Length: 245
Image (tube, rainbow, N blue to C red; front, side, top):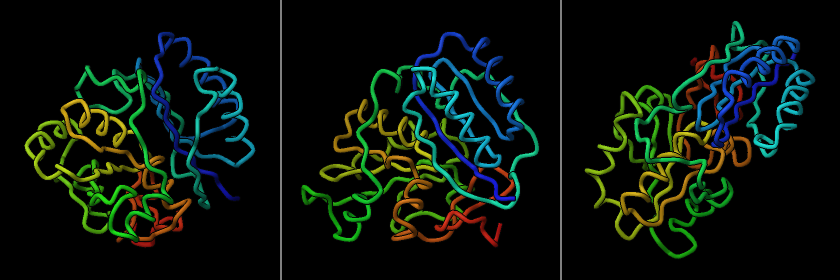
């Protein structure tokens, strides 16, 4: 049986977390989904695995809520579910940064589409002629599995260390275009918003993260695999489970 794996997130204000969790638990159990859904006042972050019909039914149901109508999952396939059970958890943040002034639900960070980023990297500059700096916002063990060529990363053990690290490195980005990236888009969106808040100009996030880049562009300018938070361990640029995982 082929399993569809999806990941998606949405920064949106949620004030009915307990009731929403109860509805999601009921629906996900009825469809025999496996994975993890995080709910917080700032939004939703989900990773699901099941046969395509079940996943499609769940996403269709979730999109009936206007807050999630534009949810845009990233897809990959596997031979078995990479999760053992279904968990729906309430959190303070869907991605922990400990920066309460950053509120992505109030406005998204500017983004660059995967095809445009590849074009910039192919040419060596963006459409305005500025040098492009790629900034990996993931943790050190994720970066070790693979990353873009010539990427800046801070060797983080936790995303909570990002604000301090980037504040000490501001000069690097002067006069350049910065593209923050991460696995699925959520961390790099918070990172891009934060960088703009502290006065770093020309910052974009990679829309959909590495997984969407793989889906739409493949492995151009990438080296290695992409760490994922499930039993696959990592996926290669074809979105297949890595043989090294």
